[in-house]
Image (cartoon, one colour):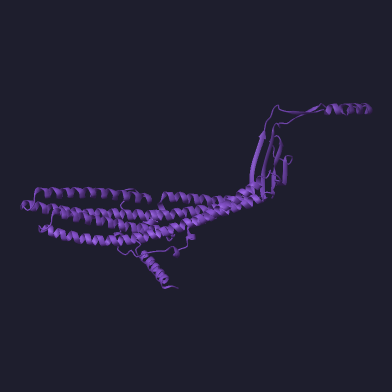
Length: 453
């Protein structure tokens, strides 16, 4: 193996260990709290629970189903069917009476049967059992894949939530660092104002020096007020992600902003892009479409079910042996022709599967690009932070030297103001640079799916 590759893999391994060592127990506790209490995540957990129950419902349809029903009807009028039984039998009965010289055969009247039954009831218990039903099988398969989709949706959001909580916490720390920088700067400009007042009292400077120093104090106070407001807003957003009261106190882990170890690095070659939940979700969609294709191809398979009814039926609401009945049978439904509707659906399903294959390739390219750019951004943030650290060191030393010369009356006030501005700006830029490194690290953790739930 080439020496350059060995060194790269070694630096990657060391970098990951160093990044793990920088993890904050405070932040880890907040991450667990957010994963337990975030309302949007709860909604996705509800969706997953519903999908799991839907699978149980789909499986329950394969078992026998029993139901009880009772119907009692009263009717008057409506269609009738006349039956001329008197016209058919009365002549025969008259002849028989003459032959037997008796009245044994009475005359009968014509009858009329109503289509609407009056004083009629049907009370029964019905048991049905599906024997062959591809609709139920298809529903069960789709329900299983729906669970995978909902689980992947939840996990995608959980990873996004982890990144959002990390970056919101880093933003809160950065605003706190800005407050700290402006607080120190305020003490410096106040000291500058005090020295300027002493110079004026000793006639070593004009009143203009005091006014300029006071303007600097006002400017830094304004920046401090703005930084404090930014910190309150950052805390409110962070608490929002954790589903807490927006004014809840946030614990500060200053080690995350004060640390200087930035050698942690990762590389796209060290993690498989296919481990992302987005691929799991897309695979589940592909399985759904494959199930649809199989379902459409089996359109000629009939549906077969059995039933058994036991109950009472007859005129008058009675439950006796006369009205008792049992009925059993099978139902067969066999679709034979639908004017090529199923063939068109098969073609559509194939097109959908081809489209998912393209989406899979496109997603692979997107995530590979995202991973590569995230690594590049992380490297760039580290290099920029190293330069900013040198800038802070130089600006701090420059201000110290100018301040000493100013206190000795050997430097102009404008030089001190300029040195102080540069020092403050360097401190702010460094805190922003540190925030950028931490934020890019959170992005890197997200794109490599490195966080373990």
